[in-house]
Image (cartoon, rainbow, N blue to C red; front, side):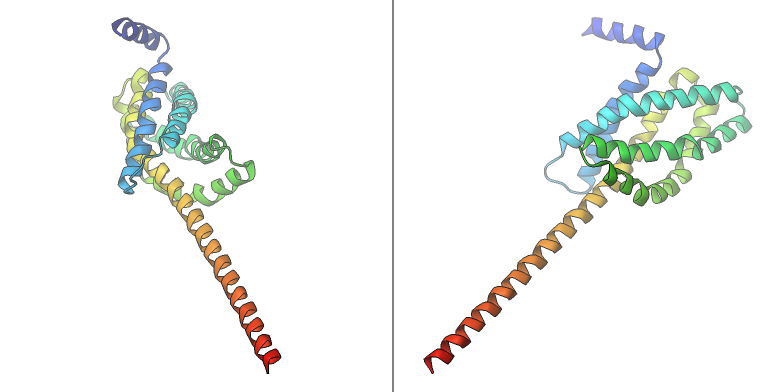
Length: 213
């Protein structure tokens, strides 16, 4: 175990993105499980948490690392003004793209049709972005001013714990609505079927009485 830890440190020092990938692979599923607990679920969906781990570690961390490198290239200073600029630019560039990719990518991991992923992006992007723009500019300003470049992905991954729970909450709301609609549709069908059977039975009874008479 110690040898593995030493190897990991060596690799992460040489390739800083590895630390971010490891952080996201742990923190994102943790946020997913926290969201499930907050909703009072008795049985946790570990498959969904695994999807969050794969998506966070293999997609979010590398793309975020790339964005941070680009931002540092264009605005290399660590002044407050530069940090504000980078944080605001992120909210109209990387942020919206990341949100769209999340909803679409998670649908692909759930083996859902592409059309359903597109529809979910259309429904959820705007409310999610409005929430994000209230939170991330402040966190990213702190990130760009105080946090060393090599640790910025790890910092964002820690900050994203609550954010990931919110994203998981958005998905669970949609799933709940779909389940509710399915239950309502099934109830309507059963009610309609019962009414139809009742009408048939009444018709048969009337005809039987007429024949008897």
